[in-house]
Amino acid sequence: MSLGAKVAANLPYLRRYARALSGSQSTGDAFVRATLEAVLADPELKESLGEGGRVPLYRAFNKLWSSAYLQVADADTYLGDHEAAAQDRLNAITPMNRQALLLTTLEDFSIAQAAEIMDMSEDEVENLVQEAVAEIDRESATNVLIIEDEPLISMQLEDLVRSLGHDICGTAATRTQAREVIEESMPGLVLADIQLADGSSGLDAVDDILEIASVPVIFITAYPERLLTGDRPEPTYLVTKPFQESTVRAAISQALFFGSSRPLP
Image 1 (cartoon, rainbow, N blue to C red):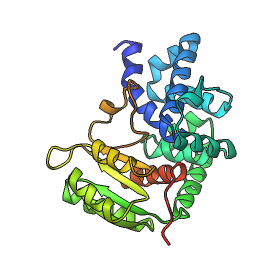
Image 2 (cartoon, rainbow, N blue to C red; image 1 turned 135 degrees about the vertical axis):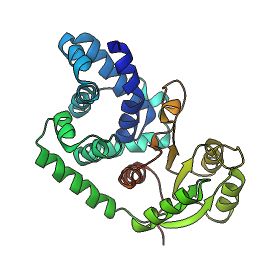
Image 3 (cartoon, helix red, strand yellow; image 1 turned 90 degrees about the vertical axis):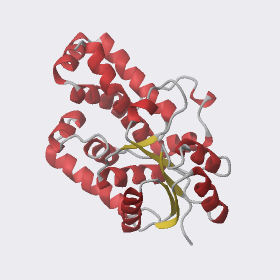
């Protein structure tokens, strides 16, 4: 396999990581583009990608991210209120713990691989992950809508959401059922499958919600690469089926951190 093919195969997942880390499709994709430009300009880095696969690619991305000097061209022209708020929050913190958590859960790297990517010791990465988990436990509780047509997965998500201290405002297996739920109660977070029971789309169901209010959304799909092409507006938060509970937990933390969810009274 050529170097170009190897990098292309990993790009959807690097975009997923970048978007979750930044809370923004446009900002995350800009960092990915900058990473590719750095690869093209550095023969040694290009060679390492051919030999090491994902780890050196994410390491190159992480160096750019950690520098915090990248200026996204014309950002104000395509950043919405939600994305602008995410950037304001990023400017106020150093999300090292979130990097460690996302690398070891969403991206499924080992602690050793995450340590190499972040240029840290394994003990340091372990501590960052523990700090991130503690932050998740401190998140304000919110109402969650689950849009999922597979009953067992829906129940699994319900149990997970409740274990994190959140409430369930409703579950839906179709777009119509989702509409019925939001007529009764607007969620503070949505977990949505893409393909629903009656052939309707979870994307359309979410659009119905976002027409009424700005709510953080996590999409759950067996085919994330189909939604992470960079060619159109795409979900910021994606979890791949079959999923690990730790992955959903990390995604919920990120979505609530960057989102506009409302605490329960």
